[in-house]
Each structure stands twice: as C-alpha cells, then as structure tokens.
Image (cartoon, rainbow, N blue to C red):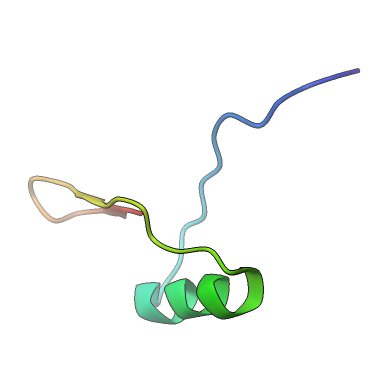
Length: 44
C-alpha cells in the first residue's frame, strides 16, 4: 500500500522549546505561523 503524508498535527505545551528541538535535532525551521483571531491557537 502506498500513501503520502499530507497533514500532521502535534499539540504541545511549550512552543519555544519544541521549535528549538526541531531546529537542533532535525534542522527544521519555522516557515510560517497562523494565530487564531481569538488567540486560542497557533499553527506553526
């Protein structure tokens, strides 16, 4: 069976710590960010 990942979601407690991990461990950088109008969520 073949498939392609098109969406992934992780709910985290500490965004700065998570971004640092992905940068240091995997070399991934934040590309874009969306904050909910009411501030209830942040998509990175």
